[in-house]
Amino acid sequence: MVINKKGEKFMIKKEENDVEKVFNYIQDKLTSEHYSYEERITPELIIKEKLKVSRSVVRESMNNFSVLGILERTQGSGTYPTNKNSEEYIKELLEIKETFDLILMHKAVERNKEKLLATLEERLEDIEKEETSYYEVISYYDKKIAGLSENNIMINFYEYIYKFVDKILKKKIESQSKKEVFESHKSMYIEISKSI
Image (cartoon, rainbow, N blue to C red; front, side, top):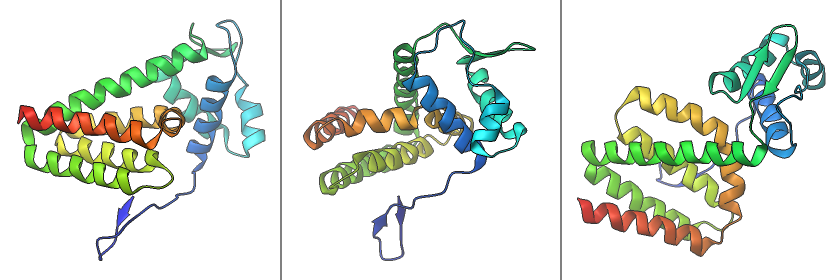
């Protein structure tokens, strides 16, 4: 979401770069197919050819998953999912994001109470106005609230985690009614405003 000079908010769709394209391909595979621990995921060369990207791009994307322990690379054998099924993987990713939401919210309360409340009020107004995708609104404000924590390492790590949960979170949020989304964010606002 971007705000222009007139104060109007609007979304900008950005094109995927090659790393994001491969990352999203692997993410879709892991969340839509049931890989077992012994089953090798699609080899790098096949992904490279299918998506028309360089092998180094495929490796970089796979390394993102390896860093968090989602994929395990075995030299000469291939890349395998860790011992988790897709439902467990999705659940754990959302738990990580929710934990970071709380940590960043706590830091934002410590450092920018008034700005945080104003941001949460804006988010509620935008959710109420939004006709189609609440996810875009929530994503925009999640990242804005992270910035209010004023901790650059946490903000960068949050961006990294957000990349992993992006599509999963979008599906989860878009499966909820407008009322459910609004009420959950309203209760968060009320709790925070009481603590200030």
